[in-house]
Length: 339
Ligand SMILES: C[S@@+](CC[C@H](N)C(=O)[O-])C[C@H]1O[C@@H](n2cnc3c(N)ncnc32)[C@H](O)[C@@H]1O
Image (cartoon, rainbow, N blue to C red; front, side, top):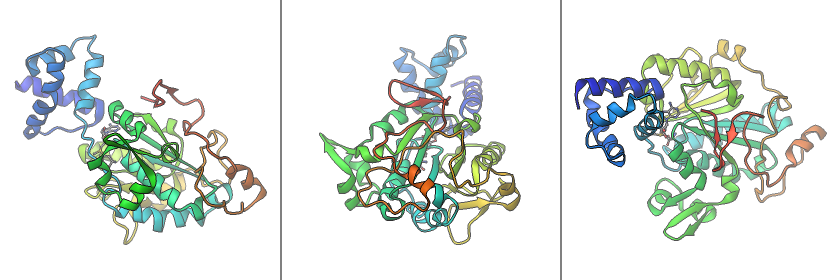
């Protein structure tokens, strides 16, 4: 590959996905993009770069950008974030005005093939005693439409279900179909998938109580990380939580977040950022469409705290719906397109 071709690809990827590609990573371009070139009946990356630069090359530019994403994920990855979810985040949420509205919105900002949002959905199901009649929405977004298709199908290989997932949860929530394992529809319906680029405007996603943004910031440069974290702070409730990957931090990157003591990877808002954030309401915001409930949890729902709350928690077996009313267009596959 010529230096000119390398520079073109590096700049295009940075601009379209935020990915920063160091010169020594040239081999990654070759290994990931040669198959794309061959699919297009091209024999070299130079030929591919020439096609990318054509005015009608948008679809190819998209394919190349998606081919360069790193989609590694597995169930209960790193364990601690899910322990923190169960032992810190959910108890904190239960002790706030949310207990009256019984609504919770969670954003998995780089959901990849779905193991992260499904691990959270399983955790929520397993906490049926406390969350039985809450309306909990998990919005899972990713830049790659290909991984979202796989996530939505909820079909995993034997290797993927054995990787990180406790065996009793696998038996409880997966069915074998041929050589694959499919996650239960009751878990799938708790997650709504959306095609979304983290470089885009977050406002259209609405406001969240918890944001999981794990193992994606590592691919961006410091100004991009700073910008994304500042914009995430604007989408988080003042007492909300941000969860980052094991190799990621807010330190030196964000003025809006601070680490939660003794909770690896967990961040809360700094006082000033919290003061500027959307307040926690006892009732859902008027702009938000009713979220799907955590339906079919299999236990008797707890008694509603107030008569008003009773109306909110009573929905059952509702399929996953887009987070914000009128946002995005549902595609044939059911993945709402925002980008
Ligand atoms: C390594 S995976 C992380 C998956 C999961 N969060 C985990 O920790 O297991 C990173 C994901 O980020 C997505 N991604 C990369 N750049 C993105 C962007 N600009 N906007 C949205 N998603 C992006 C990739 O497509 C990929 O699926």
